[in-house]
Image 1 (cartoon, helix red, strand yellow):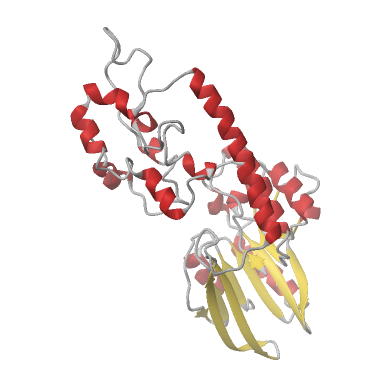
Image 2 (cartoon, one colour):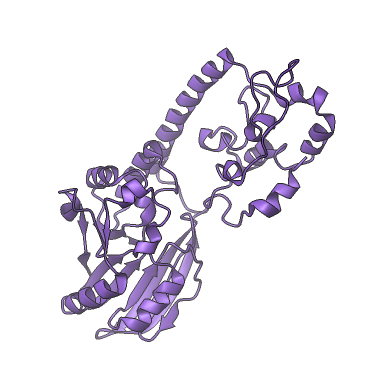
Length: 352
């Protein structure tokens, strides 16, 4: 079993990511490529957690010279046996994949050109294996280009572009597959070989939904993480009760037309979507579906989006409210939750 990279989310979340690495360590991976988001908590964090969970990281393009343990934790490639076959698993991530990474973290990484590295490494690894698989975090289009320019690759398992590739794409003698986004599917590629050549192939993308039997160990790990979040949420509720925040009902007397329009928006009914999904008790979801945990779960209310001063509404107080920005919206409508979110189009549905 392999992964093309991005175990973590787009934003730093070391508490959650510790649990993610623990879970991944229990799944018996053969190789996991280093993606750009795997460095979001810092290189030291990635190495520490990967070693603690015995994750078999690979990358032939990414190095971090300032970390002495990088070479031991992250190999350019790994050689595994599947029956009588020797399978080479090589990882690559190009420099442009890291363009959104914190510049301070990016400065500690050295990224070699993917095509140059592949040409050299494929030539060396091809002599030692019967099947050569590249775990690529370059994106679907870039993978097709690599398959054209670098001979000798049997399979490219891709990532980064989050492309749902139902039927493998054959470029020259190289098969390219990718299983979409957010761990929603598990790809199962079945190969029939004659000598060192792929004779037949079949690909299945298995939905990782409620039809998959639960794993008791992983369920306990998730429950522990959710329990930790609930404890922190209770602490925040105590703190917020000491400094009460305005609810929608407090704003309505002065903003009746706006309140009436808000009442028709998806924001108003955001908590109801959690109830339908059975996630109303998940603190990780609540933060983007309710404004105040103690406000009868009335969805996303005024102060989730509008920034007001303490004297707002008071005689001689500041009455102007800054315009809601795209950055504010994207704290919840991020690329993971809403990959097709376009601020200019979506803001029209809630503006008042």
